[in-house]
Amino acid sequence: MNSAARPAPPALPVTYDDVAAAARMLAGRCHRTPVMTSRTVDERCGASVFFKCENLQRGGAFKFRGAYNALTRLPAEQKRRGIVAYSSGNHAQAVALAGHLLRIPVLVVMPQDAPAIKVEATRGYSAEILFYDRSRDSREAIAERLAQQRGLAVIPSFDHPHVVAGQGTAAKELIEDTGPLDFLFVPCGGGGLISGCAIAASQLSPGIKVVGVEPAAGDDATRSFHTRTLHVVEHPDTIADGARTTSLGKITFPLVLHYVSDMVTVTDEELLRAMFFIWERMKLVVEPTGALGAAGLFEGKVDARGARIGVILSGGNADFRQLARLL
Image 1 (tube, rainbow, N blue to C red):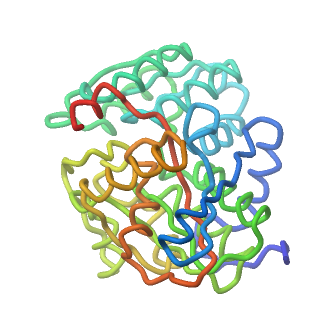
Image 2 (image 1 turned 120 degrees about the vertical axis):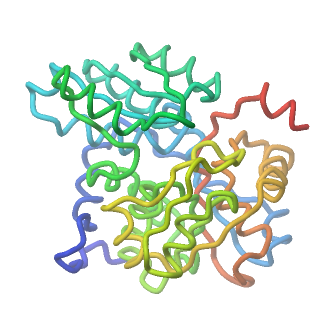
Protein backbone atom coordinates (compact mmCIF):
# COMPACT_ATOMS: atom_id res chain seq x y z
CA MET A 1 0.00 0.00 0.00
CA ASN A 2 1.47 3.29 -1.10
CA SER A 3 0.93 6.00 1.48
CA ALA A 4 2.85 8.69 -0.40
CA ALA A 5 0.66 11.74 -0.81
CA ARG A 6 -0.95 12.13 -4.21
CA PRO A 7 -1.03 15.82 -5.19
CA ALA A 8 -4.55 17.21 -5.53
CA PRO A 9 -5.46 20.03 -7.90
CA PRO A 10 -4.51 23.39 -6.32
CA ALA A 11 -8.15 24.53 -6.23
CA LEU A 12 -9.14 21.86 -3.71
CA PRO A 13 -9.00 23.10 -0.11
CA VAL A 14 -7.96 19.84 1.62
CA THR A 15 -5.39 17.25 0.48
CA TYR A 16 -4.21 13.87 1.69
CA ASP A 17 -1.25 15.60 3.33
CA ASP A 18 -3.77 17.38 5.57
CA VAL A 19 -5.42 14.07 6.49
CA ALA A 20 -2.02 12.52 7.27
CA ALA A 21 -1.11 15.53 9.44
CA ALA A 22 -4.43 15.18 11.28
CA ALA A 23 -3.72 11.50 11.88
CA ARG A 24 -0.39 12.41 13.52
CA MET A 25 -2.13 15.03 15.65
CA LEU A 26 -4.85 12.60 16.75
CA ALA A 27 -2.58 9.65 17.49
CA GLY A 28 -3.13 8.64 21.11
CA ARG A 29 -5.88 11.26 21.52
CA CYS A 30 -8.76 9.65 19.68
CA HIS A 31 -9.69 5.98 19.65
CA ARG A 32 -8.49 3.84 16.77
CA THR A 33 -11.93 2.33 16.55
CA PRO A 34 -12.35 -1.36 15.73
CA VAL A 35 -13.29 -2.81 12.35
CA MET A 36 -16.11 -5.34 12.69
CA THR A 37 -17.35 -8.02 10.30
CA SER A 38 -20.45 -10.21 10.17
CA ARG A 39 -20.93 -13.48 8.32
CA THR A 40 -24.66 -12.76 8.22
CA VAL A 41 -24.06 -9.40 6.53
CA ASP A 42 -21.60 -10.92 4.06
CA GLU A 43 -24.15 -13.56 3.08
CA ARG A 44 -26.92 -11.00 2.82
CA CYS A 45 -24.88 -8.66 0.61
CA GLY A 46 -22.90 -11.26 -1.32
CA ALA A 47 -19.74 -9.39 -0.45
CA SER A 48 -17.02 -8.97 2.18
CA VAL A 49 -18.09 -6.07 4.38
CA PHE A 50 -15.97 -4.21 6.92
CA PHE A 51 -17.62 -1.83 9.39
CA LYS A 52 -15.56 1.04 10.82
CA CYS A 53 -17.14 1.51 14.26
CA GLU A 54 -17.05 5.25 14.87
CA ASN A 55 -20.03 4.70 17.16
CA LEU A 56 -17.30 3.63 19.62
CA GLN A 57 -15.30 6.83 19.18
CA ARG A 58 -14.80 9.31 22.02
CA GLY A 59 -17.98 11.31 22.33
CA GLY A 60 -19.85 8.53 20.52
CA ALA A 61 -19.17 9.66 16.95
CA PHE A 62 -16.54 10.43 14.31
CA LYS A 63 -16.98 14.14 15.01
CA PHE A 64 -14.35 14.08 17.74
CA ARG A 65 -11.65 13.62 15.09
CA GLY A 66 -12.37 16.86 13.27
CA ALA A 67 -13.22 18.85 16.38
CA TYR A 68 -10.00 17.98 18.20
CA ASN A 69 -7.90 18.55 15.07
CA ALA A 70 -9.45 22.00 14.56
CA LEU A 71 -9.31 23.15 18.19
CA THR A 72 -5.76 22.06 18.82
CA ARG A 73 -4.55 24.15 15.86
CA LEU A 74 -5.99 27.43 17.17
CA PRO A 75 -3.55 30.18 18.22
CA ALA A 76 -2.87 30.35 21.96
CA GLU A 77 -4.80 33.59 22.42
CA GLN A 78 -7.84 32.17 20.65
CA LYS A 79 -7.70 29.08 22.82
CA ARG A 80 -7.90 31.36 25.83
CA ARG A 81 -10.94 33.23 24.44
CA GLY A 82 -12.76 30.14 23.28
CA ILE A 83 -14.88 28.93 20.39
CA VAL A 84 -18.50 28.83 19.29
CA ALA A 85 -20.07 26.01 17.28
CA TYR A 86 -23.55 25.12 16.05
CA SER A 87 -24.85 21.58 15.97
CA SER A 88 -27.84 19.34 16.56
CA GLY A 89 -25.74 17.04 18.66
CA ASN A 90 -22.65 15.08 17.67
CA HIS A 91 -20.48 18.05 16.69
CA ALA A 92 -21.71 19.77 19.85
CA GLN A 93 -20.51 16.86 21.96
CA ALA A 94 -17.25 16.65 20.02
CA VAL A 95 -16.23 20.30 20.44
CA ALA A 96 -17.38 20.22 24.06
CA LEU A 97 -15.21 17.19 24.78
CA ALA A 98 -12.25 18.52 22.81
CA GLY A 99 -12.55 21.88 24.54
CA HIS A 100 -12.73 20.17 27.93
CA LEU A 101 -9.57 18.20 27.20
CA LEU A 102 -7.71 21.23 25.80
CA ARG A 103 -9.12 23.66 28.40
CA ILE A 104 -10.74 25.83 25.74
CA PRO A 105 -14.10 27.50 26.58
CA VAL A 106 -16.88 26.20 24.31
CA LEU A 107 -20.28 27.72 23.49
CA VAL A 108 -22.66 25.64 21.37
CA VAL A 109 -25.76 26.87 19.53
CA MET A 110 -28.22 23.95 19.50
CA PRO A 111 -31.79 23.60 18.17
CA GLN A 112 -34.55 23.37 20.74
CA ASP A 113 -35.51 19.93 19.41
CA ALA A 114 -32.00 18.44 19.61
CA PRO A 115 -32.00 14.89 21.04
CA ALA A 116 -31.97 15.05 24.83
CA ILE A 117 -29.13 12.54 25.08
CA LYS A 118 -26.89 14.81 23.00
CA VAL A 119 -27.84 17.93 24.96
CA GLU A 120 -27.06 16.17 28.23
CA ALA A 121 -23.71 14.91 26.97
CA THR A 122 -22.74 18.36 25.69
CA ARG A 123 -23.52 19.86 29.08
CA GLY A 124 -21.64 17.02 30.72
CA TYR A 125 -18.46 18.13 28.95
CA SER A 126 -18.87 21.62 30.52
CA ALA A 127 -19.96 23.47 27.36
CA GLU A 128 -22.32 26.45 27.49
CA ILE A 129 -25.47 25.88 25.38
CA LEU A 130 -27.68 28.46 23.67
CA PHE A 131 -30.89 27.08 22.15
CA TYR A 132 -32.58 28.39 19.01
CA ASP A 133 -35.72 27.70 16.96
CA ARG A 134 -34.59 25.99 13.75
CA SER A 135 -37.84 26.96 11.98
CA ARG A 136 -37.28 30.65 12.62
CA ASP A 137 -33.63 31.40 13.38
CA SER A 138 -30.34 30.98 11.52
CA ARG A 139 -27.82 29.12 13.65
CA GLU A 140 -24.98 30.45 11.50
CA ALA A 141 -26.08 34.05 12.07
CA ILE A 142 -26.40 33.47 15.82
CA ALA A 143 -22.93 31.96 15.99
CA GLU A 144 -21.39 34.79 13.98
CA ARG A 145 -23.00 37.38 16.23
CA LEU A 146 -21.73 35.65 19.36
CA ALA A 147 -18.27 35.29 17.84
CA GLN A 148 -18.06 39.04 17.24
CA GLN A 149 -19.48 39.92 20.65
CA ARG A 150 -17.18 37.63 22.63
CA GLY A 151 -14.13 37.29 20.38
CA LEU A 152 -14.77 33.60 19.77
CA ALA A 153 -13.59 31.47 16.86
CA VAL A 154 -16.37 29.77 14.88
CA ILE A 155 -15.80 26.03 14.39
CA PRO A 156 -18.38 24.78 11.88
CA SER A 157 -19.57 21.19 12.02
CA PHE A 158 -18.29 20.31 8.55
CA ASP A 159 -17.22 23.24 6.36
CA HIS A 160 -13.73 23.75 7.79
CA PRO A 161 -10.46 22.36 6.38
CA HIS A 162 -9.13 21.04 9.70
CA VAL A 163 -12.49 19.42 10.45
CA VAL A 164 -12.57 17.71 7.04
CA ALA A 165 -8.98 16.50 7.43
CA GLY A 166 -9.70 15.11 10.89
CA GLN A 167 -12.76 13.21 9.69
CA GLY A 168 -10.72 11.65 6.89
CA THR A 169 -8.59 9.79 9.40
CA ALA A 170 -11.48 7.34 9.92
CA ALA A 171 -11.15 6.01 6.37
CA LYS A 172 -7.35 6.13 6.61
CA GLU A 173 -7.43 3.79 9.61
CA LEU A 174 -10.04 1.54 8.02
CA ILE A 175 -8.02 0.90 4.86
CA GLU A 176 -4.79 0.52 6.81
CA ASP A 177 -6.52 -2.22 8.81
CA THR A 178 -8.36 -3.98 5.97
CA GLY A 179 -6.22 -3.41 2.89
CA PRO A 180 -7.60 -2.05 -0.39
CA LEU A 181 -11.37 -1.85 -0.81
CA ASP A 182 -13.64 -1.73 -3.86
CA PHE A 183 -16.37 0.41 -2.26
CA LEU A 184 -16.73 2.70 0.73
CA PHE A 185 -20.23 3.64 1.93
CA VAL A 186 -20.29 6.84 3.99
CA PRO A 187 -23.14 8.78 5.66
CA CYS A 188 -23.53 12.30 4.30
CA GLY A 189 -24.95 15.42 5.92
CA GLY A 190 -22.90 18.53 5.26
CA GLY A 191 -20.14 16.53 3.60
CA GLY A 192 -17.30 16.79 6.11
CA LEU A 193 -17.04 13.06 6.77
CA ILE A 194 -17.46 11.90 3.20
CA SER A 195 -15.05 14.55 1.87
CA GLY A 196 -12.27 13.60 4.27
CA CYS A 197 -12.89 9.86 3.86
CA ALA A 198 -12.95 10.11 0.07
CA ILE A 199 -9.63 11.96 0.05
CA ALA A 200 -8.02 9.28 2.20
CA ALA A 201 -9.66 6.37 0.36
CA SER A 202 -8.63 7.57 -3.09
CA GLN A 203 -5.05 7.86 -1.90
CA LEU A 204 -4.77 4.56 -0.05
CA SER A 205 -7.01 2.41 -2.25
CA PRO A 206 -6.79 3.68 -5.86
CA GLY A 207 -9.84 2.82 -7.91
CA ILE A 208 -12.15 2.65 -4.89
CA LYS A 209 -15.72 3.89 -5.39
CA VAL A 210 -16.86 6.13 -2.56
CA VAL A 211 -20.65 6.23 -2.17
CA GLY A 212 -22.38 8.84 -0.07
CA VAL A 213 -25.74 8.03 1.54
CA GLU A 214 -28.16 10.63 2.84
CA PRO A 215 -31.83 10.64 3.91
CA ALA A 216 -34.35 10.98 1.08
CA ALA A 217 -36.08 13.81 2.95
CA GLY A 218 -32.84 15.81 2.87
CA ASP A 219 -31.36 14.93 -0.51
CA ASP A 220 -29.55 18.22 -1.13
CA ALA A 221 -26.12 16.58 -1.51
CA THR A 222 -27.42 13.92 -3.88
CA ARG A 223 -29.07 16.52 -6.10
CA SER A 224 -26.00 18.72 -5.90
CA PHE A 225 -23.74 15.83 -6.87
CA HIS A 226 -25.80 14.72 -9.86
CA THR A 227 -26.45 18.23 -11.21
CA ARG A 228 -23.08 19.71 -10.20
CA THR A 229 -25.05 22.68 -8.88
CA LEU A 230 -25.41 23.39 -5.16
CA HIS A 231 -28.93 22.59 -3.90
CA VAL A 232 -30.52 23.53 -0.59
CA VAL A 233 -33.21 21.68 1.36
CA GLU A 234 -34.66 23.83 4.14
CA HIS A 235 -35.67 22.07 7.36
CA PRO A 236 -35.38 18.45 6.18
CA ASP A 237 -37.76 16.24 8.16
CA THR A 238 -35.87 13.02 8.86
CA ILE A 239 -35.10 10.76 11.78
CA ALA A 240 -31.41 11.17 10.87
CA ASP A 241 -30.90 14.32 12.95
CA GLY A 242 -27.18 14.43 12.16
CA ALA A 243 -27.98 14.78 8.46
CA ARG A 244 -30.45 17.66 8.73
CA THR A 245 -27.97 20.08 7.20
CA THR A 246 -29.48 22.21 4.45
CA SER A 247 -26.63 21.87 1.93
CA LEU A 248 -23.03 20.99 1.28
CA GLY A 249 -20.53 23.74 2.10
CA LYS A 250 -18.14 25.91 0.13
CA ILE A 251 -15.29 23.60 1.15
CA THR A 252 -17.07 20.25 1.00
CA PHE A 253 -19.00 20.70 -2.26
CA PRO A 254 -15.95 20.77 -4.57
CA LEU A 255 -14.35 17.92 -2.62
CA VAL A 256 -17.47 15.77 -3.02
CA LEU A 257 -17.61 16.52 -6.76
CA HIS A 258 -13.93 15.60 -7.18
CA TYR A 259 -13.56 12.52 -4.98
CA VAL A 260 -16.98 10.88 -4.54
CA SER A 261 -18.17 8.28 -7.07
CA ASP A 262 -21.91 8.28 -6.36
CA MET A 263 -24.58 9.67 -4.05
CA VAL A 264 -27.77 7.80 -3.11
CA THR A 265 -30.64 8.24 -0.68
CA VAL A 266 -32.59 6.02 1.71
CA THR A 267 -35.99 6.56 3.28
CA ASP A 268 -36.39 6.80 7.02
CA GLU A 269 -38.08 3.38 6.94
CA GLU A 270 -35.06 1.85 5.17
CA LEU A 271 -32.73 3.63 7.56
CA LEU A 272 -34.47 2.35 10.67
CA ARG A 273 -34.56 -1.17 9.21
CA ALA A 274 -30.78 -1.09 8.79
CA MET A 275 -30.22 0.43 12.22
CA PHE A 276 -32.28 -2.20 14.04
CA PHE A 277 -30.61 -4.98 12.04
CA ILE A 278 -27.20 -3.75 13.23
CA TRP A 279 -28.48 -3.55 16.80
CA GLU A 280 -30.01 -7.00 16.77
CA ARG A 281 -27.59 -9.04 14.66
CA MET A 282 -24.25 -7.30 15.22
CA LYS A 283 -24.92 -6.11 18.79
CA LEU A 284 -23.71 -2.62 17.88
CA VAL A 285 -25.62 0.48 19.00
CA VAL A 286 -25.75 2.97 16.16
CA GLU A 287 -27.94 6.05 15.84
CA PRO A 288 -30.08 6.62 12.73
CA THR A 289 -27.56 8.90 11.03
CA GLY A 290 -24.79 6.45 11.85
CA ALA A 291 -26.58 3.71 9.92
CA LEU A 292 -26.99 5.66 6.67
CA GLY A 293 -24.04 4.01 4.94
CA ALA A 294 -25.19 0.55 5.99
CA ALA A 295 -28.73 1.28 4.77
CA GLY A 296 -27.43 2.25 1.35
CA LEU A 297 -25.58 -1.06 1.14
CA PHE A 298 -28.33 -3.26 2.62
CA GLU A 299 -31.01 -1.79 0.35
CA GLY A 300 -28.95 -2.42 -2.78
CA LYS A 301 -28.76 1.21 -3.84
CA VAL A 302 -25.47 0.34 -5.59
CA ASP A 303 -24.59 -3.06 -7.04
CA ALA A 304 -21.58 -4.10 -4.96
CA ARG A 305 -21.94 -7.87 -5.02
CA GLY A 306 -18.68 -9.79 -4.88
CA ALA A 307 -16.76 -6.73 -3.71
CA ARG A 308 -14.72 -5.77 -0.67
CA ILE A 309 -16.76 -3.06 1.00
CA GLY A 310 -16.08 -0.60 3.79
CA VAL A 311 -18.94 1.00 5.72
CA ILE A 312 -18.53 3.90 8.13
CA LEU A 313 -20.84 3.56 11.15
CA SER A 314 -20.56 7.23 11.97
CA GLY A 315 -22.18 7.50 15.40
CA GLY A 316 -23.83 5.71 18.28
CA ASN A 317 -25.59 8.45 20.23
CA ALA A 318 -29.05 6.95 19.91
CA ASP A 319 -31.89 8.62 21.80
CA PHE A 320 -33.65 5.51 23.07
CA ARG A 321 -36.66 7.44 24.35
CA GLN A 322 -37.33 8.85 20.90
CA LEU A 323 -36.67 5.56 19.13
CA ALA A 324 -38.92 3.67 21.54
CA ARG A 325 -41.80 5.86 20.38
CA LEU A 326 -41.04 4.90 16.78
CA LEU A 327 -41.13 1.24 17.68
